[in-house]
Length: 356
Image (tube, rainbow, N blue to C red; front, side):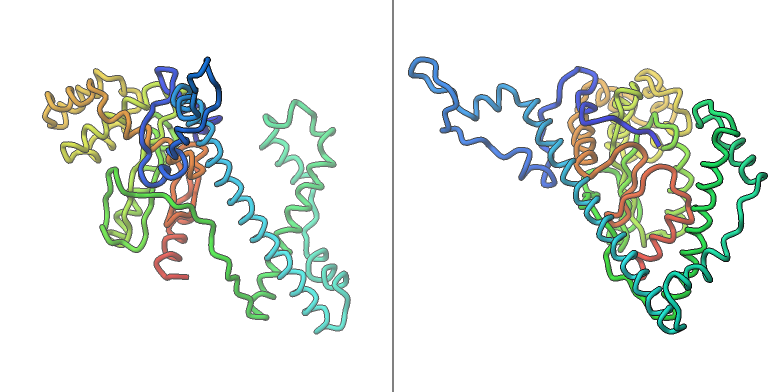
């Protein structure tokens, strides 16, 4: 997954934020007008109003408000994760109490019998294998220095696996159902290229960067989803160019929207992800001509930069939604970052289709 650092990504190639409307998602908060009558300074008898100050430093105020919305999303996600985790811990504790009571033993004795006694001991070979696999990330320390920590880590990992397996049997035995909805973010699919059913019960919104290697890797997964579910799933593509590390991505994003004007977004989309080393403007124009576009219209569109605002709008909407890098997908608002395996995504889609 390709990550970015902060909303400073908004500064783009020209070094300043683009002043543009974000539409219904952001307009109520980001674009709230200051009270034009509120004076904040005077020069003689002439008042300097709050509105004038915010207009003078519009880029800085806009970025500050964007950071606030980004932080709110992160806070809501953290609260949801805490609530979900604490719910599972509380249920687990009560299940262990109920099972221990039924057996007439203490929780400690139950844990010892069903978990501790069933955790396979960590062998020297296990430690050796772990060290060899991860030694490049272990700060140059020797196996002898880390053996104790590795053994403790692997023991805890195995204990956790055995615990979860046992708790799973208790959840079935005592008919546990978790009623907390998955964490969701309101992310609009409208405004950009979409394929799939217009009234599909499942919507996937993908924030992507045409120069991001992992974004290219996940394209077969997205294609497989489209082929498997057809009109049951609609897939919306939204732009998230990371200027600081992918200098060609923003213009490639604009090019894709120029292609969209001609009803050929997905053709250029596939071509750009198929060759991420050919994303300079001249190469994009050549590719469009090769794909049978109206070359004159495409070239004029790309040179004019008329889709720059649309790209920026997507980028800012993604930041507010909590996108921390590319690719990030939202399945009916549920966020998934990076190269998530097809099996994991289809499990979520099937869950959404079932209404559970």
